[in-house]
Length: 506
Image (tube, rainbow, N blue to C red):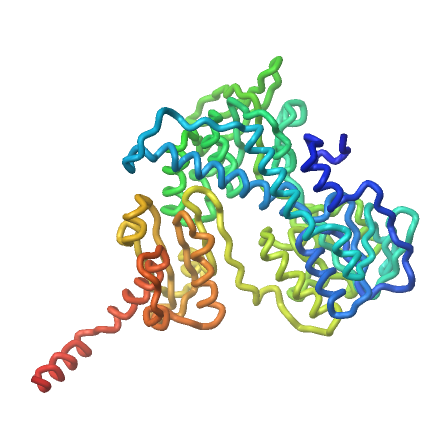
């Protein structure tokens, strides 16, 4: 059986995964001279930095203490989206009656089979992040814990690696809760939930952010009785209120009981059952369940790195301190990804690593603040956002115009009976340059890229309106935003002039 907690059960698929991302028989290389770049952490930021630098001719070492691929491959994006795809399918089948499709009864799901499929797909993807692939690219891959022992040296096991430049890409882990009983009740996190082989009949999810909402909804879709606890007044509190309201209605329809404005009091283990005691509406309530899943944020992985030995400043809450060029207080060490960014997304880590390559190895001057980072929460429907929120614009005294199209107005959405949601953009008042956008739709994560591309390249609503979109598609809603903008240009004066011209043409 594997010693790595994430690789339970230790079946053929997890053995395949392990063989790729943490081979049992791996022998660390012997360092030969100074490295151009030493990378600590084999998640997205670390892998991109290592492969990119090696591809440009740099001598690179990559250090990983657990699983190459990091959270995204092993306990994040890949396994969660494998489950979400099944949950959406089950939810659609349950709604089939309204579409004229007769069903003999409730759809039956086999949770062991669902999880086995997830492990298979994860293993199938893992060769891309494998130790063998990176060694073949000329990178010295070290399995073990890397620790700074000086301003230009890192120790791995009994070997010392000397570097000209280094990058810390050690990622983050699930945050814990300081409440009575938290440790004793054996709570799940994103790092352990994908090891389940039996569906919890009763599940409590603590946290109403993206991870909490995605997992609460999918477990409800798969048949668990789910109670979600959020201390704020609504789930997805970072998103616009009407966006989170659409998701909340959908989650409730899928069977999730959502308790907002609710505080945790304590947790208890009572024989085979777990108890979560909460306070809401000025009363305490005991919620009995089989499993507790916490999704209350992330903590940077900085312990054991020896940062003080390398004169690298850090904060236990926000991680490694970096400037806008991702340089730490040690000018030869950079940091990228979740350990040093408020944008804890795989795609953000990817592009931060590209900045590190330019700035560390080629005297680049690229800035992290120049990155335009979109994100998506993969609930049903999805919520995607890029740029500023209206509240941010107001706080900065930026006057804006808002354009919005409801999917209830889009033919494709009507035809698919998925009309809840909207596309909304804000622009500088009187102009068409997009400052921010939010999409709530089944495929919002894909749709947001058109608006991100527009913002990045200075394409405004006028040019979007002149771009032909296939009919019928959900993306037609984006073109209609441009039509709305064009109608605002038809002022009384312009309309009068056009009328006079047409009269003259008679």
